Structure formats: structure tokens, C-alpha cells
Length: 313
Figure: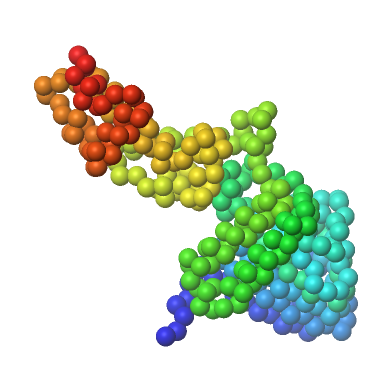
């Protein structure tokens, strides 16, 4: 049986042996990249593979190359395998002897007989994964914070490379997403990518949780899944969970349950005992399993829902 092609997947291989071919190949990396100088003789090999969240470029050229680029909407992490490479990002020269992160902004590189891997991480996707607005992301380190984090990052990149090299795995959305999520997690921790919301002196970044709770409040009586809430907040499910843990110290599911329990209590307090049943009110607010609902209600308010109803006016 053949592999079902996923339209989100990009898999392109380019081989070039002249200046025009090299410029065309390099332009695949970014719409805002300029080739300043190319040596000769020319022999370039390049493969770009991945999806709209993460692209992995394996690159090799047998001469010297000088390029300038403007990185927007993404961050790039480069890993040199062989050859000479010098890189400056936003005016700061980096140690190209170990993997390095290129923040959004201007980058310039000079290379000679180099083979390298370049990961392009989509910023909105990274923001959704971490539970932050992309505009609030802070890139704390150009290189991995420790040798242990560096080893973990390298192993993770090796894993995603194996996934991308296998057509069956590459075109399997669940396997590909898991591999990309692993890269996001390893990159976030290795290069200290976080938000100003993580600093104790600011509340920036709570907007994403605000979007989620506003959606929950507006649809509290409707069937709600964590995926529904994540989409409304423009986050991944994991990003939503991270944001709720960081800002509210709870989970999305627990927040929904607590809001629904509060709605039930408010209705029971205002109800006419002879005209209302606990079961009807509970079901109206999304509690299908009544014994479990009663347990949660007692744990939250210290009494049974029937007691609340009996005391109502």
C-alpha cells in the first residue's frame, strides 16, 4: 500500500552547479535572503523537509558562500557538521562550532565547504506550543544552556531527522506532530525560550488565558473539549495546559468544572425547591454523571447540592 501524501508536508531536494541554481536554492530558505558572493567551482546539495510548523534543511556546498537574510515569523537553529562557518546575528557574532539560535532580525554568514542542518521554527506555532503570544516570546540564549541540554537537543534533532527521512512516518500526521513537539520542547528548554509572563514583575502573556476563559464562560453550558478551548485561544492543547498551569495554577478541565459547579450553585440558590431538581440543573450545566457531580460539588462547597436547594428562597 502506498503512502498517503499529506498536503501540509514539504519535501524538496535541489542540486545546483551554477550561480543561478545556488541563488535559487538558497532563496527557498527565506523570501528575504540575499546571496552576496559565491565561489567556484560550484556544487550544492540541499533538502528542505517538514511542515508548516518546522522545516529541516540539510545543506552542503563545496565552495565559499556569503549570504544575508532577514528572519521574520520564525527562529532558526543551525548545526554545522563540517567546514568553516562564521555567523553574525543582529550584530552579535556567534560560536558556530556548536548549534546556535538565530533570533528574528538580521543574520549574515560566511561559509566554506560546509555541511549543516538548519531548523526553521514557525513562531506562531512555537507560541501556541508554549502557551504564549508569539509577540511576547523572549529568546534567552544563543547556545544551549548546558551540555546536558545540548545533548538532549542533538538527540531530538537526530530523531526528527529519522522521522522526516521515512516517507511513511513523515506523512503520518500524529507521528510527525509528536516529533515536531519534541523538537519544540527541546529547543524551548535548551535555548531558554520563554515569555516575559514568566517574570514575577509583569502580567504580560495572560491574554491567551483571558481568551480561553472568555470562550469557556460564553459556552459554559455547551459541550466543551480541551481542543475547542485551545483553538479559541489560538494555542495548542499542550500550550493551553502550560498557560493555565502558569497563570491560574490549574488545568483547563478543572477550570471548566469549577465554573460549571459555580453556575449550578448560583441556580440552586435562586431556585424554587418545589419546582426544581438537582439533576435537571446539573445536566443543564454539563454534568451527565450525577454521583460524580455530587462528589465534586461537596468537595467544592462543603455540602450536598440537595442541601443548597433546600436552603434556597
